[in-house]
Image 1 (cartoon, rainbow over the protein chains, first blue to last red):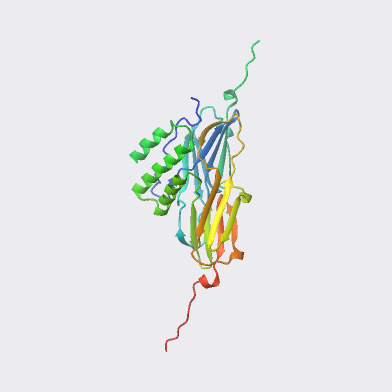
Image 2 (cartoon, helix red, strand yellow):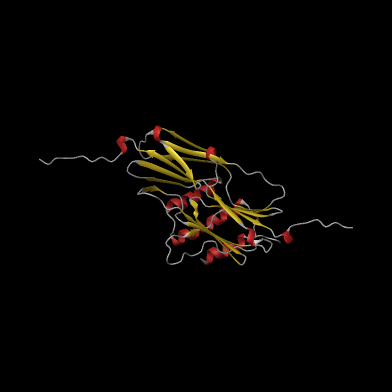
Length: 127
Length: 162
């Protein structure tokens, strides 16, 4: 099967000793179109500056660090997870890695992963 | 760690349905509980959200000297889709994330994000000034700031010792 994510690594990476905040795995939607793949990841509390997107070979790592809380407040009740976001994907070889684009808006990171020309479906006419 | 890894590897063979997400959350939750990373409130939230099978955005409540601050994680909404109301000491946050127009030709690999309505009601621990409530929505986080009523603010009383 031609999967964009042939394999997904353990999403919650153990934090290095220097960091105190753990990572959680953001929820994602991934769809495939003729042109490529679109990945949307939910990262509430993360601004552009807190984003880190790395591509090594065909391993894509998205990391989002939350904007730190400002001011002195007393927490009365907490349901949110005081963690940063990280998730690792292995990309299909059909993705043209030089043309990946990313944007974040209201806590949703959207990645566009276009397919290489040779990987796009095309019609072959029979003479 | 081994438990979490073993269970996870099976998930990738399942279709990308909501069930996968809730299973994954459950395993995460079990794992976190064992390690003791999460506060009880978070675990309770996760359990409740599974029971309800609906979108249950996490809410944080904090206070400073002058305000009560309620924050809700609501990624990817439009401002006009969020409703905030106050009624007799209860603050209600509700709204809806509409499912985006589906492209017929698009194949879905993962569908973990919630869509549909959410509804949260918070009992306010003290009186607030209703007409001075302000709300902002940035980075997918809704923040409602409710100024404390005069009688709810801490007071310092001078007592003269005779």
